[in-house]
Length: 396
Image (cartoon, rainbow, N blue to C red; front, side):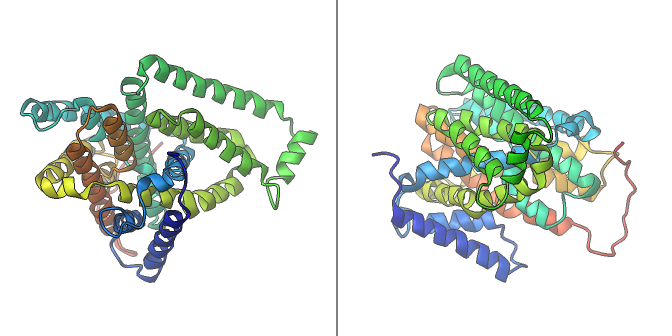
């Protein structure tokens, strides 16, 4: 059977997840994000090194982990950002990125370097918000003015590429993709009606309020049911599941109301405690190292393009509202990509529109961005007691 989980491989993946967390805790000054350690551990236990197991052994649980990555990213998004200057500038920056990526990838396609023009162009405009959230939280970069701009840039860099991918690259065509979006919209409306229907003080409201703690965990169980249902229904349409999970996170944030703080901590525990690290270990196991070794310059080219296409516009778009240092941090954070790249390459390989060499190089470049760019952004953060050099315009 295709989706049978191997307990041996799962145990090895769990060991990698624990070891990565221990290393980060024991070596706090180590300039390597935990996600890179998870990917490296996956490579080590994967078929190209130790051969402990294959990616197929844990794929079904890894798909749930990918769903959690985007659910938690969507849950972090405050839609009010898009009514502010931060959201408007993020949209402009992404549009410029797409405008730069399209001719760059067109030239690569013209010389025969790549085949899948649209997937790679979109891949160059993505931002790994779900991957970055733990790092940004730990380093305090989500607080204050800069945090609003980082969140908006990450949200746009994750939502718009996934939305475009689902509509134009879905394995079942645009009609099915649009139908999927419509289904999520209907679900959002139903959840809104349900929330209004649960009157404060009613028996159902009391049951939900009391039952969100201890053994019942009603809100957590409902959230996991929502996510698993999305993954199950869209099991054969990987990117649509990603989009559904992301939008479900946005809907969930607006729906839970007073339960938000306790539910958020529980989702962090379940997601970051097991499913999310498992997804990144799986991604490392599935990485084609031989293809990267055969054409390393292709990886370097994709990395440079990510930095220029996605990060470059931030240096101009955020003039007048962020300092040079903050613009540099925003550019580096914006250019950091991985989860959407993994999903993109998988759908490209399944449909035959992307070669294994380009898929491996694109994911490898994403790994390099996760390894290098967040660490540089954190290093740029002003040390305690350092005076500000500029006084940018505050958000209204």
